[in-house]
Amino acid sequence: MGLLVLFGFGFLAGLWLFRKNTIKANHTPSQVKGKLTVIIPARNEEMNLPYLLSSLQAQTRKPFEIIVVDDFSDDRTKEIAAGFGVTVIENTELPPCWTGKNWAVWNGYRHASGDLIAFLDADVRLEPHALESLINARETAGGVISVVPYHYTEKPYERLALITNILGVFAFTAPSERNNPKKGLYGSCILTTREDYDKVNGHEGVRSELLDDLNLGAKYVEAAIPVTNFIGHGLVSFRMYPQGIQSEIQGFGKGAVLSTSALRLTTVILIAVWIIGLIVSESALFLLHTSWALPLSIGYILYTLQMIYFVKYVGVFGRIIPVLHIFSTLFFLAIMVYSAYQVLFLGHVSWKGRNVKVGGRTDL
Image (cartoon, rainbow, N blue to C red; front, top):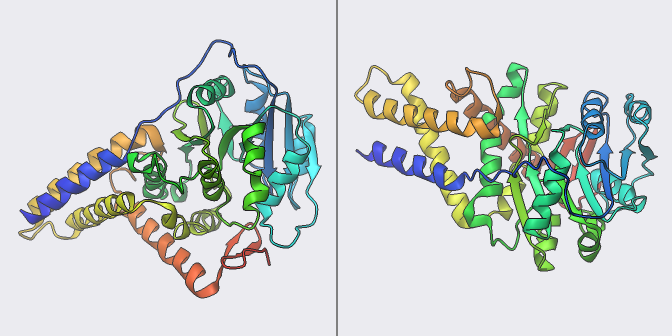
């Protein structure tokens, strides 16, 4: 009976945490005036950049300018960007007390002239009416908006990110986070007005922060500017780590532990209940010939059905992982251990050839 209660609470916690906060697709020309600048920080993004720049060319709402900041890439990032006819800026040497991405984004902004500013990671891909819809959504919500993109995966190792992606959506859409004074933005896709960005001093105001997007969101909240997060289903997507499982582990590991500190206690508790129920239910795979088999199987079926529903809005993870989700759970637990090891023992996290200090927050 106790197990069924746990699975019931876990299932309900998942339903409460997950919000289908999608952006309404807009197929008609936006009435919102102003020039739109798109800023893309890029470090060794030759595999991703063509998809994003091609999708920007196909937009119904054309950006006034697209700025790619080449952050000391040692691949063909700069040449590919130039081939699309966009403005390419070579990032300058990293000053003290700045992290790499913050410095790249800030340098891009210093060359921007738009009234609206969109910050996009290089792995993002947009549907043709995405910018139009994002602009209308920001106009309706006010303030700044960000989007958790729909995650397209292709290789088996990429699909291990299922649980990690679901938890990310929980963190950014949970009702308990709406009035969080530390409410963050999702850095892959952010849209703001120049006026609001200047009010919070932009990325210069969070220049030393490892988790730039979370801290930037908190700056907007502190300035009484609304922060609204959406999920990108049908409009904004990405393929996060086509380069290999090492980049996937580093990418998720750099902020897995630190990001939990920005969440409200209610959100953390409900996520913990959901995860505990999930892990316990997955023990059914090893206890089928015991007296625990029936309640554990019921829990496993409940979580699997919930997973299948979530996947519809979170990403493409194949047919096997949403059913045998234990592999994704083990991957998530390994990421948390790795992240904790970096933060607590090494004092820095690794990402794209840089070691970023957790305390001093300067790149080594």
